[in-house]
Structure formats: structure tokens, C-alpha cells
Length: 79
Image (cartoon, rainbow, N blue to C red):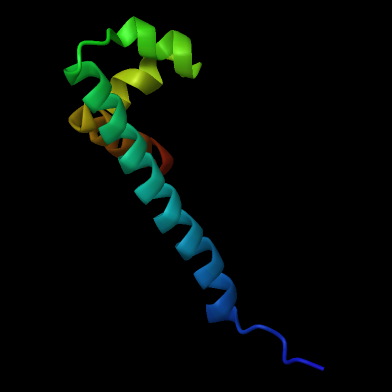
């Protein structure tokens, strides 16, 4: 019988997932920015991907995504 996972091993599951998700999102966002650079319109990307206009705006503008994250963090911490 195997030993139960430690608390640190279980925490690593969530940490690894978050890191992989962040990497995948960054790769997707770069490809979407490349599509814009190639001449596609933001409306085309929204229609084709099914993403909301706001999600697309954040994907195309990393500064906007960071501002939203900071605002969300401040709200959740009660500041």
C-alpha cells in the first residue's frame, strides 16, 4: 500500500495547475495578438473563439488584464 500524499504534495497539485494555466493563457494571448498583427480584427477573434469582448480585450492588452487582477485582489482583500 502506498503512503498518503503529504500536505505539500497536495498543495503542489494546485500550484502546478495554476502555473500551467498561466503559461497556456500567455501562449494563447500571444497567438491572439499575432492574429491581430496579421490583419485580423478583434471582432473576428471574438466571433471565432467565442470569447467575450472583455476577455479578448484583456488577452490583447496584458496591462488591462493586470489592472483587472489587481482590482479583483483589492476587492477580495477588503481594501
